[in-house]
Length: 253
Image (cartoon, rainbow, N blue to C red):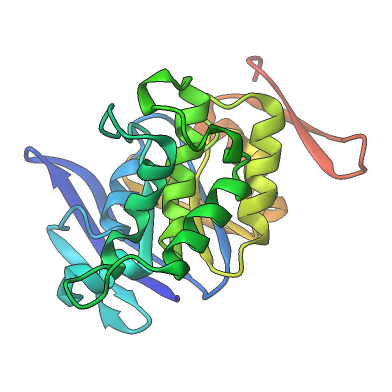
């Protein structure tokens, strides 16, 4: 799914949060959003998911205006995991993931083998198969995050939106989750705080004060000057053990 954002502005309770944002995410691209806390990343993600209506501007999904897309079609094509996602406490893990198949069910189309396979595959992808029969309220924060992502994968979307997906995850699951997301053959937009994780994206966009102030390949965007201006930190590049560039930060400017 190709996403085009054209002069998008949004506000919450009369407070402007986004201002004249324009961007394009190509079909199949892994696009990262970075920026300080309160910069507008989560608001932009909610607009992309169709959950928040902008005050002006348009979002096009494969050329069609997102605001006119039927809710069921949008739910089939776009999956979104928010930072503060929640699920009914009395569900089992498998039942929670099965909610991702809801857009495909109707009085004429009941639960079938394809739905079972989608749920099983999603649980396997996030390494939660052994937890399938556990109740939701018995899970840790990191385990819950993995279940939410599994539910999004079970939707089999064309566009996957993840807002801070590595929150609450230990380092092994952070790395495995990002490897999984990178390998998906769909369009992915991910808001991240970890700038070294963002460096693995195809392209990134930098949000500051509700505006998109830079876009491009990570090695072109994540310069010492931009990091100082946007995040107020000094940064140096050093090679990681695998040879890839790694950013190291300091308060000193």
